[in-house]
Amino acid sequence: MNVHIPAGDVCAEVGGLIEIETASTCAAAYAMPITETETVAIHHAGGRTLAEDISAELAMPPFDQSAMDGYAVALGDVMLPAGTRMPVIGRIAAGQIPKELPPGHAARIFTGAPLPLHANAVLMQEHGWRDGDELVLNRMLRSGENIRRRGEDIEIGDHLLSRGLRLDARHIALLSAQGRASVTLRRRPRVGIISTGNELVQPGLPLAEASIYDSNRPMVMTLAAQAGLEVIDGGCMRDDPNALAVALGELSITCDLVVTTGGASVGDEDYSATAVARAGGIFETLKIALKPGKPAVVGRVGEAAYLGLPGNPVSALVSWLILGGAVVAALEGRRFQRPSGCPMPAASRFERRPGRTEFAPGRLVENSGAPAVEILGRGGSARLRPLVEADGLVEIHPLHAPVAPGDMIFFHRFRDGFTV
Image (cartoon, rainbow, N blue to C red):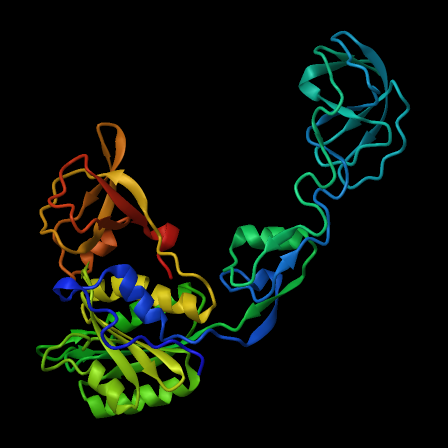
């Protein structure tokens, strides 16, 4: 097994808390990169990780073409002044093969159409007018104007994309423009997700006294699916370390990553680490300089990486985005780079103690006519309503306390990066 497992005290830092980046490195160290590949149709490749280097097999543009609607002009090496007249012959639309254009002549041409032989400039249609069969220039025209030259964007042999890249719509467009109908990708990571807790009841069933409905597993399963992972429902389990150990062992046979929510702290009723040990795995219990999401368990069971998330919903969400993001990147052979967020001014005061990076729900507002972000109170890691009312998460530096109106904080929009 070619995987680096950190020593048990490698994550220890002054004060017993470790920084987010260190925690992410610890979690990722337990993941074995997936080596299996598959060939996938290009329109199904979005969100997947590339398993091959891509070089250009086609110049782009593949021929000299017009950059504007207007007139292709064969003007030679001269510069044509305003008032010049020349005969117009022919009409060239995109996709048509043009006839040769005699020197001193023009042809009607449209954006993307190939230039005819001898044409070396395109006059924008706004810069000329037709007088019968003649074109009259109302401005000066130089050689090379409004032409997209063959290969000016990409030349044959140029390196385009590297293996390990997660493809998005931009990359799909580039591959399609190169004529690629399929691409070689790493197999999707398989993640099994379990929620734990004696108090949990599944949605759709009657709610017993002193119980709550399970929201973590559906949330993390959705986040994993949005990230392009193959999700396996491990179900909801009571706080029984022996039963949980059996479930972890079974999921580790088919999954690359096993995730549990709840029981990740060090209380008497927190059994994640115990279950990993009883399943024959290895683990570390992390105390992260993060709010919410201070406790987590990372490790390995069989051939699967393991990630034990806190039980409160917002804590589980933040921990998944940070630690889960690092583990998934390692599985896919990518370099994990935590999103930095967009700097924005705070709209109001937010009291907090320094010492930990804090994430909180934030809502976009206008403040004196400029965009700002309102931190939605001290919502607590168990509250979902502020999360639903938010446009994203704010990230506050460990030493930034308190946050005053106008102070710059980092904002992560849900629609821009609510995935791993």
